[in-house]
Image (tube, rainbow, N blue to C red):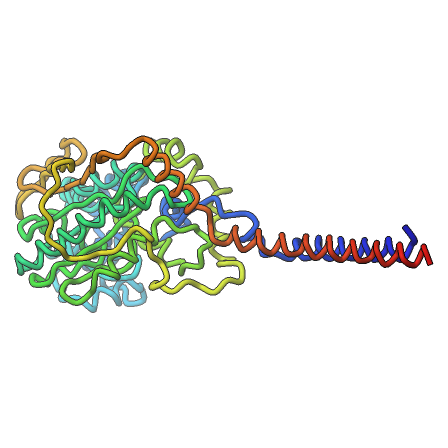
Length: 439
């Protein structure tokens, strides 16, 4: 081949390599973390602050009580502080002035977004025993133990807080129950496998007091006894999106919140969807060990935290951020229809006992059990109907092919086009070179 022809062919080949090199890295290598994965990683979230306000310098009894309780909070996302309410320069005092607290000592819980929940005021003889009792209710509750014990097994947890309208309560519970099998059908289409669909917990008006701190931390309006409210959690007891209120919000907003969970971490979602506030809880070495085994990465590893932080900071690699309305499972579509229960559907119910208002829960209770009342969690396990084995294999094959990311198809088309251009261009150069040689 004459030298000019060789140079021309080399140029075409170099153009192909350069074009491949400038493809966005996020499109060549898929992120190995999903939104759900990221929700298990604590990237330095602000803790809840349990603040004991004293009138004047804290006395020796308060200091002793604080020191006795502090060790119990080491594995939690709650810190304990003693503050003189007369210290006008302390930022917590400015927050206290927005409340009606006028008697001290007072105990207040401050959320990461600086909302306040007054737990006690005017407490006389606030000793270690009383402070320990308060800490018990802050860092744990039966529903929190239940959802944390299921965190690695389920897609998410839906908490329905009943309002004053019985018909609306039934409608929203039915809506949530309808999403369970629909999400189950969508699980094979997600970037990473998840064992089970969403877990449903229903809290009646009588059970709200026992889970007051959990619901407050999620942003549920504890004073509203009319609307039915829904909060969704995933990952490490992390809030997913805003609290939904019915009537008011629609089913599509509920659907979109659930659809976020299985998305790739570089899908372009706003970081707040992946790093919503966690509820107050204990995350000890045992839970960390289980997390490593189930997630197949260490969510507490500094390397993992750095990698995910960089991914979130980098964003979607030049792609336009996804609007909330663009996030949807292909298998989800809520409709209100009346159907007779099919014979081949088994409804597995598990009662989570919740203490009635005013009853204290026992610290020795097993995870997920509470003294009185029930939280109905209905998981629909649909039996496979009378399809042949060939039909099942065809369905699975269709699901696997549908799981191929759309971006991969785009990349394949681009690469194929570039290869075709290189071949045609190289052939043309060789043909032209041959004609020159023959002439």
